[in-house]
Length: 322
Image (cartoon, rainbow, N blue to C red; front, side):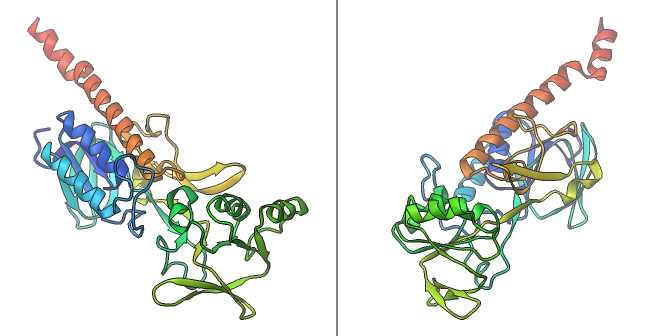
């Protein structure tokens, strides 16, 4: 695009999905702008796990390295938020929180999600450290410790089953979760998982660490880590003007959060807009989000290639030349 404020692709979000997409597009010689608010979902975590070759890397370091790689191929960055996206494929306007605006032929939405956490004192303060949600992401780090599972949905029972793989000392606090069936209680008993009924009042925090779960009656059960079930809500408010919204995502019969609906390669229902990462998949890990960003970027590039070949302006110019 000749307009100094225009890009082939604007990537909204600078996490694993957005940066991987931007890297792929920059290497494809596309003009790319990444707009990043610096609010990555995994920012509180000590490290990224199950990411081959980068096991244990701090999220901030992973993203810092990725930004440098993208800049090496000519990609650009802008710190800020996006208030609104308008227009259509070929000429989107991306309006920033600062009041400025840029234009884009295509959009890659990689804004991730916001975790809505149980309203229990101590949970948010320790989120991503010793308040956890994913056994595959954090189970090794809390192995053999006393793990408490705070049930707020049917997922609490399944978390207790899973975390038993990493520790023999697992306690399920029923809190606000559904009543357990006789079969579920028998299953937990067979695994050696203790069940503590009743609401939880707060997490006990001492010396910058969770040390216990305090029940409504004042009893404190010692733990080294607490597992919760967050509700990830996709960040899509800025897309309302183009008709893109998030819907509830379900797995195993349970609603687990909201996300934008995409096809296998990340295309949304709005022509010219792709989505990747947690904004499109509640369950995506960092490495899966990165892969989704690459897939979406490849399809965006192909879409732009096809537009260049078949655009009416080029066709008319070719006819005049003949």
